[in-house]
Each structure stands twice: as structure tokens, then as C-alpha cells.
Image (cartoon, rainbow, N blue to C red; front, side):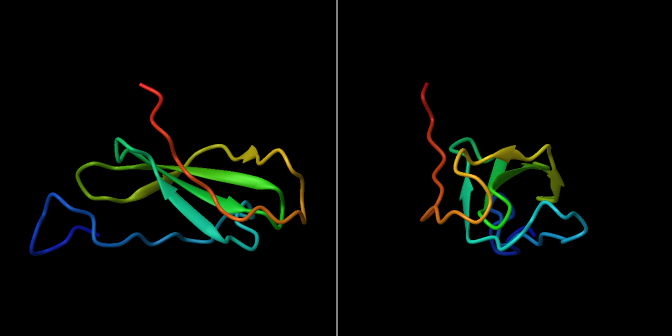
Length: 84
């Protein structure tokens, strides 16, 4: 959702749990350019990326990828880094 006081800013996100990709989500990170949100889901060992619509702020789930640790492991969090 866009912030009513500052339309250029995103005030909140709503993630619909229509996908089985989100299992015990514990952390989120926003990409430095603001175009992607990453959800850490250690219950199934996945990082679930979302594209952020620049106009509405709505999220589109992209293809989940392995967190490299496997299901049931205990990563402490996630960070997004800009290597440019």
C-alpha cells in the first residue's frame, strides 16, 4: 500500500498465502533499489522473491530458490545487498 501522506513511499505490504512456498516465514528484506522483496522461509528451506509494482506497490511472487541450508534449518535472517 502506498503511504497516503507520501505517495512515493510504500507504507506496507500484504502477502497472500496462496502459495505453499511460504512456510514459517521469519524475515524479509527489501532490495536496495526497492524493486524486490525477499521472504526467508526456513520451514521449507526457501527464499521467496517478490517483484514490487512501482505504481501500486502490489507484490508478484517470483520463483522461490533454495536458501542453501535446507528445510527445517535455522537461518537467523536475510539481507539484500547492492554490489554495484
